[in-house]
Image 1 (cartoon, rainbow, N blue to C red):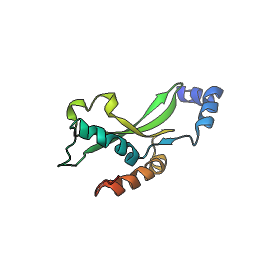
Image 2 (cartoon, helix red, strand yellow; image 1 turned 135 degrees about the vertical axis):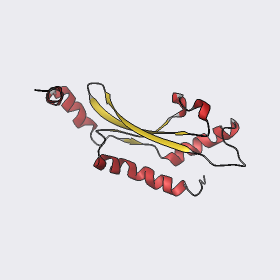
Image 3 (cartoon, rainbow, N blue to C red; image 1 turned 60 degrees about the vertical axis):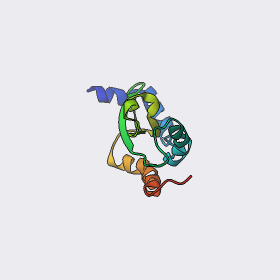
Length: 125
């Protein structure tokens, strides 16, 4: 029996996974931007006369706790390159228990894609 079989037969892990099914979290990028844009303007990270924000979205899965996988998507702005690697400059968009596969990513990213399409030609608060 390989290590994967041992994890799957562990009743504590099975219970945790069953309890977490459907318990993903999503924060709309528009709401995060509504909060952050005034701060970025004040700190002169973005300029009112050149109101273009370059966003990098990244996602990855990690084992959390006893090998229960979670997938997380974050974004940061590329306008602030000197602070790009600081954790406070990465904002969580999506977090859900599970693995990265086409079906789960399609469901998880659908709302984010809709939000991005609505702001790509200009964000209006």
